[in-house]
Image (cartoon, rainbow over all chains, first blue to last red; front, side, top):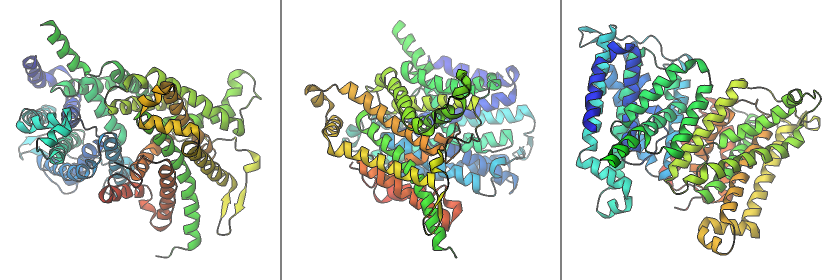
Length: 304
Length: 300
């Protein structure tokens, strides 16, 4: 089944700007990368972070600032944002893995709230207005990113790099140890693995790629706003992963597509959309814990 | 820095009046977590629901029912809101949360997060996000009292005293009565308690209802102080989570004391360095995690 998904992903990814509105396609890719990065932590290590908006939105602000004010070229800007997310991830991770399970979720949520208040209060972020008018600039100094197609394929390339990094991480000895920790942590410890170190590395990798997604989004949409660092964004990425199927490679991509498309279709409904989002959460948790891709895989397996 | 003692004391009183809400909410979270092993993310939304019961009872219910003069005053709301919201909570526990006890704890968190989003989204449709003032503050509590260093609103003083009394009553029941002993035994070993002929599933439902009712009571007390808004609980619950991490959920008294103390510290920060008032509790959480990861009162 995975082969079908690979073909679909690359085929649709290449054809997307001709099928749908390119800006919408880019939004999908940014959120898909965000959800995949998040899934690395929730799906493969079993750690629920409720603070990933801090990496996503924080990187968006940093990228926006260095590109707009310091005149960095777009890729260097995205790298700077990513680097920021890496450092922030190391700090948050070091603190949060001191506690287990449910405390982990509460700690990450509280830590992310610090970044939210900093974004609200610091001067360079523009407070309530956000950071606007970030130039897209030129890729390698030659390709003009204000062209939708050029921008799209840049975003697609970034997404694929991130996705392949996650794929490699999962299918490596490192990924095997992560899964072992998720399944039976005391046993992993007794086998001599330094569990905290593995958790921290997974956390940092996840935070870094979430930062890449946020940084890319800032370049695409040319602004960074408080929405990106606030806690509902952390909740959204949890939902994307849960709906698509946590612990599956392609689930987060499917989940992100579904949620972003839903926001797009239902944008006229005002805050009823939050009722619907909450309802999907409830239904997923009660009856659909494997998510779309997880259920599909189970169906196919039980048939053959 | 030139900060007068009176200003510090005044801000600390205001901090204390926020602290009692932290205490009541973290107390409810701790009681629920002890028996159900669920962190109730909807706790803030249920606090909001309590405030809305008071608001709707005072300003809307009469016209809706066709009796313009009918009003649910503040005093009845103090009883009615916790009862209504408590029953709603028990319904949630019976119909949904109960199905998740056998799975990983994070599912309980995710479920209650979804419920919180639904409640907030629902009320946002009908009420202004920036808040509706509650007009039902009883006349006997209007006005101010002279505390020597400041004039303090009588109602806030009432809210502080009432919350502290409720918190300590709860502590007394849990730590010093037979009912509390059964409850604590249920936390330690539910199977054994069940074998002694006590209906543990019923006890779990009632405990959840009680924790939620505490949140609703806090909501009613908050209604005259802050304006009633669909998002009033969302912002509060994150701070309360930090309070819970700082205190650790092992002890009832710990939850109360931590909530009150952090309210005071927040007030103090507002007097000395206002920009940090929003984040000081989160930074204290960071320090506690570094020094004593299990929390001040936690046993891990």
